[in-house]
Length: 259
Image 1 (tube, rainbow, N blue to C red):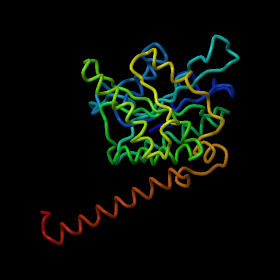
Image 2 (tube, one colour):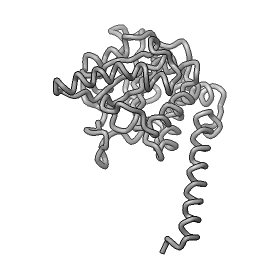
Image 3 (tube, rainbow, N blue to C red):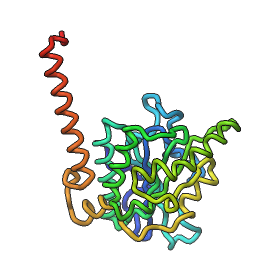
Image 4 (cartoon, rainbow, N blue to C red):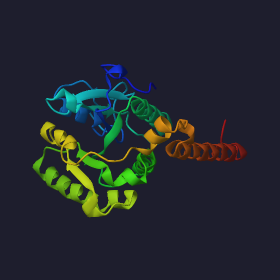
């Protein structure tokens, strides 16, 4: 996986640009959000929560978008990322981390972090829980309260919309408070049902005064990814899985269940 691909080239990045990290599970609508903000289709989108082979984003892509009509105000750099998917997160998160460090080295800090949640997913799965563990270590505990949570893939049927509205509000007091340690009133939760609502991601909440942890670790302190907090977490998870598979293999072999 390449670290980052930006259409205008890294040399165009300026210190008054601001990164917008868009992250979430496979098929949650990250690339669609990027296209809605840009007002045109540049990012490849998935059309379902279980994308077909070749659909969607396979590497980190960075798209510039003006903050205003004044060039001196800088640009938003929309960071479109591959979907998180339990079991394959390690190379994905490493690629995201390298891209953020690369931005930092060009003087660009991430000012907004957006985590997308498909509204049809009412409850957190083990994969979602791992996403939250990754997210906390990627941005750092100090930045967690500033994360914007956006609900996507809203239905069009009237009855289903009412159910989705209920699920949206329940997320504030359930998933994001339970797994991210946030108080319900402080959860930055947005409905992202249309291109107009997508643009609110950039305007509803003020930019951060902090820098994501992995940007500081890799971009400023020169820490290699494996030694960052998120790298150590995923390496430990991978090691536990390897040991588990080894134990299962030994058990199957001992009981002559393998041919």
